[in-house]
Structure formats: C-alpha cells, structure tokens
Amino acid sequence: MAEEKEPLDNSRLGKSKRKLVRLQNELNEQIEKVFEHQRKTNGQPMNDKRNGHSWFRQQERIENKVHSLREEIKQQEKQVEKLERQEELKEMGYNKYGGLDMTIENIPRKKKLNALKKVNRLFQPPRFENTNGSWKH
Image 1 (cartoon, rainbow, N blue to C red):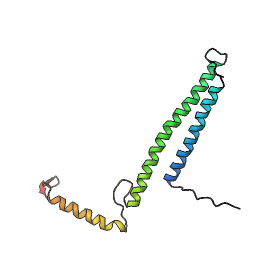
Image 2 (image 1 turned 90 degrees about the horizontal axis):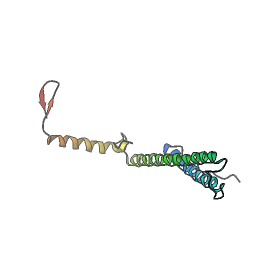
Image 3 (image 1 turned 180 degrees about the horizontal axis):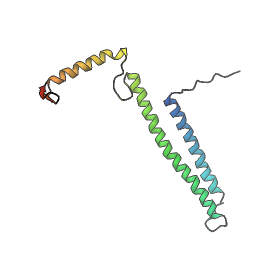
Image 4 (image 1 turned 30 degrees about the vertical axis):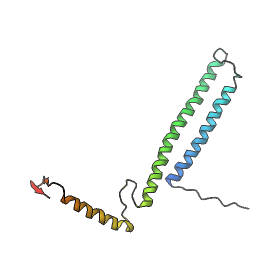
C-alpha cells in the first residue's frame, strides 16, 4: 500500500534543479493571473472607469512579478549549468576549478604533469631571481 518514494537529492545540484522547476511553475501561475486579470474587463477599456486606476496598479504589479520571475529563472538556469559542469569535472577527477584532485587515481596524472613542467622549463629563457641578484635557470 505504501508507495516507495524516490529519495530526494539534497546536493546543491538537486536543490537547484528543484528550485528551477518551482520557479517555472510560479511563472506559469503568474502568467495565468495576468490573463485572468485582463478577462475581468470583458474587453472594455479601463482608463475611464471608476476603479480603473487600481486595476492598472494591480495589472502592473502582476506584470512586474512575471518579469522578476523570468530574471530569477535565467539566473537559476546559469546556476544549474555551473553545478552540472562542476559535477562533470568531479567525475573526470578534477576539482570545481578545473585542477586535478589529490586522489589516488590522480597521482600518476600529477606525476606526468610535473614531469612536463620540468621539461618545459628547459626551453624557457633564464629568469632573474630578485632575492640574491643572480640568474636562475
């Protein structure tokens, strides 16, 4: 009888995706409110009616809410995209900044990178070291 619920993903990515879905649902509701509020006029102009000013204020408030929700959705989509990229990097063995994580699997890769850095240094011009005034290779 009791249905098995899928466990919630409480990672930052899971929370961000749920927030994005919630914001999109709110946006749909607000757009529906705009049309519903417009239907109250029965196609008549409201600028010369007794309660026209309050109707326009309410219309503007609803439209501002729609606009702010669209901006928030754009920001949330960027956040989800960033977190997905970090997740991909983590699966490949990199940290969120694109560098290698210090894990057992990455030790051989780190050694190769350090060896490449040493080889590359042989082909660079000498640097002047400021501490004792000597040239360093």
